[in-house]
Length: 72
Image (tube, rainbow, N blue to C red; front, side, top):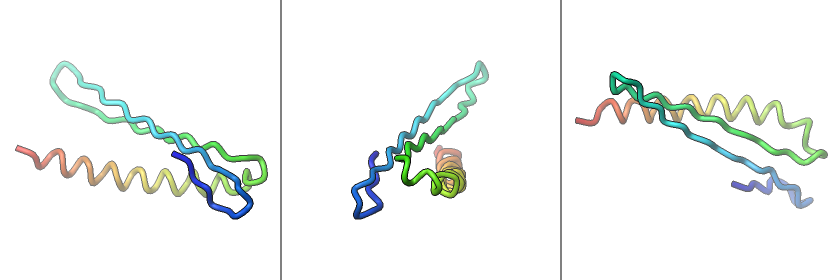
C-alpha cells in the first residue's frame, strides 16, 4: 500500500504480511507483520505510526479471531 499524507508529495510505503501456520493438532496461528517505509523528512513520525499500527493490528486480529472461532 502507498500512503501520501502530505501536499509535499512524500509517500509512506506500507507492507503487511500475514502468515498462517497449522500445527499437528490442527490449530492455526496467525502472524501479522507490518513494515513502514518512511522518507527521510518524515522519520520523526515513524515511532508514532508504528505504535498506532501495532495497536490497530492487535484490534483487527482480535476481531478476526473472534469471527473465525464463531464459525461452525
